[in-house]
Image (cartoon, rainbow, N blue to C red; front, side, top):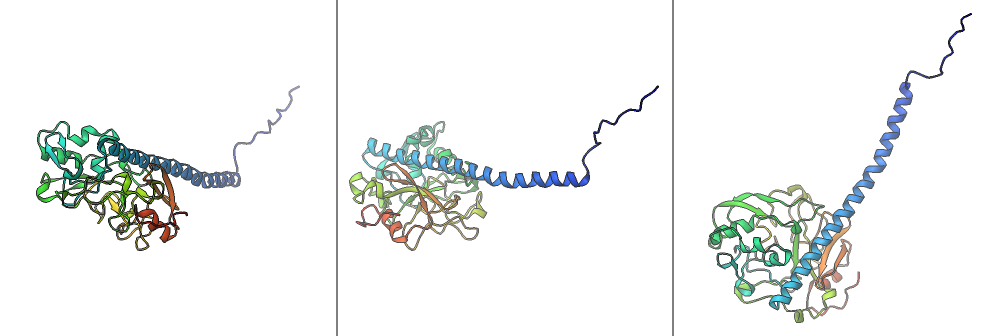
Length: 304
C-alpha cells in the first residue's frame, strides 16, 4: 500500500521581509567597517608621511656631516638648479636652488641630482625639475607626480621651453621670516646653517614639515605649489611659524597661505632639527608655535 511522501520542511527561499532585513544588516556592517578601514589607511599614510620626513631630516644631517653645513633655502624662485658643468651640481653658496634639490644625493637620488644621461645643463635642469621624488609626497594627499607642463618659470637661469614640474607636499620652516634652520642664500652669500647656529636646541626647533595646500586644486597649479620641489626661496618650499601663520588643515579655497598644514586630521607631521618627527596639533598655542619655529630666538616656551 503506497505511503504519502512527507514534506522535507525546506522552504523555497527568503521572503521579501527577510531579504530586506539581511540587506539592512549588511548595510549596517558596511557602515561600521568603512570608517574603521579609513582610519587604518590614514594611520598607515600618516606613518609613511612621518617616515618621509624622517628621511629628509637624516638627509639634512648627512649633508652637514659631509659638507659642514645644512642645506639652505636657495636664492629665489626664479633660479633653476645650478650646475658648474654637465653632471656637476654646484654646492653651498654657489647653488641657487633650494633644499629639496640639495638633499637629493642623501635620499639615494644622486643620479637625478646630477642629471645622469643628459648632455647639456639645460637638459639636466629640465629632467630634475620634472622628476617626481616619492619621499617628497604625503600619501594622505596624493601619489608622486608632476604638475602639468608649463612655460619655464626660471627666466634666464632655466632650461627654457615648456615642461612639467614635480611638486612636493613638504616645506622647510622659515621661522618668522628667515630665522629657521634652512635660511635664504641671498646673493650667494650663505652656505647653510651650522649646528652651532641652533642655540634654541635641535629638539626644540622645527626643520621640515607638512605644508598646507588647497585640496580642491591638488594636481593643478596654485599659488604656493607651482615651481616645484627644486625651487629656491619661495612658498613652494617654505612656510612660516608665527601667530600670524598658525598651522591649519588643507582648505578648499585660496591656497596654502604660507602656512604649515596637512591632509591629516588633527594636525601635521614635523621633522625637528635633531632628526626626530613629531605630530603637532592644529590647536597648538601660537606662542609655542613661534618658539618652535625660530632656531636662535631664545624663547623658553616649547611645550605643547
